[in-house]
Length: 261
Image (tube, rainbow, N blue to C red):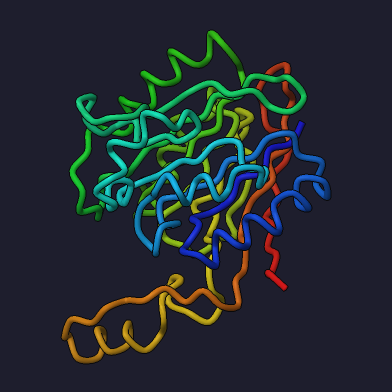
C-alpha cells in the first residue's frame, strides 16, 4: 500500500491547495491513506475547527501538528471534539488532545500515526521526544505494524537521530517544521522510510510562506515587522511512502511537488 504525507499547510492558500490537489494525488499515486501537518493552516499559525471543517472531504485522514498547535486561543477547547487531529505526544499529558492514534485506511489497514516535536533550537519547551516515541510505539505496534511518525523539528541532526532510533520499528519517520523540502529521502535497512523535511504547502514566491518584504526588513534592519502569509502561487510538497502492509516495512519513498493552477 501507499501513504501520502503532506508538509506544513500554510494559510488560506495552503488550504485551497489541499482541497483541490490531494484527491488527484491520492488517485495518481494509488495511495490509501493521507497524513498532513496542519499547524500553520489558520492564518499562518495554529488550527481552528472551522479551518479543519473546511478540509473535510479533501482526502486528508489525519492532521499532525507542532509548536504552533496552541496559537489560536480557542483551539484547546476544540481539539477534543476533533478525532483526527494530533498534538505533539511529548507535550505535557495535562494538555488537551492526544499525541498518537490508530486510524483506518481506505483498504481497511490500520495505520498508527504519531506527532512529535523536537527540542533542539525550538522555543517551546517539551518532554523528551525519544521517550515519547518509545511510549507511542509500545502502544501502537501491538495493534498495527504500520506506524507513521511526524517529527516536527528544526535540527537535521535531531531528525536523523530520530529516524535512526526508530529504524526497524516505524514505517516512516518524516520531518516537518522548516518548510523546505530536503533531498535526503531514503529507506533505512530496517525498513523505515525517512526524510528530514517534507516541505510545505505554501507560496513559491515567499520566505517560508510569508510575504518577502517584511521578512527582509526584519533581517536587514533588526526591527520588528508583521509577517503576512502570501496566499498566491501555491506549491504543495509531499512524500509518498510505499510499504508492505503485512510487516509495516517501507519499500520505497518518493518526493511529490504539485503547483496549484
